[in-house]
Image (cartoon, rainbow, N blue to C red; front, side, top):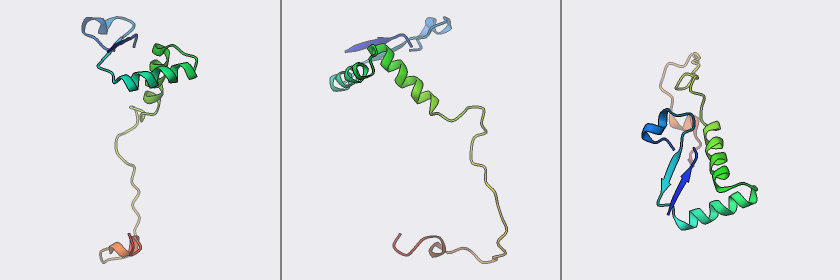
Length: 92
């Protein structure tokens, strides 16, 4: 089973304005569920797949944001090492 979307990156077409994605070997059950989802949203299959991709990309962290965590350290005045049971109850 092959689906051709107006949204896969392919060789020489990569430099053109609109990119396209080619998805091959889709499980028939997945394809059927995608069709049903498209119907529920009153979209074409292409429109539904485009919406799914756009939603997934929106949920990604912003690339301009610095990678990693922002950590804040504080002094507790404690000089010995912390023990596990000071953080977690004994059942964890």
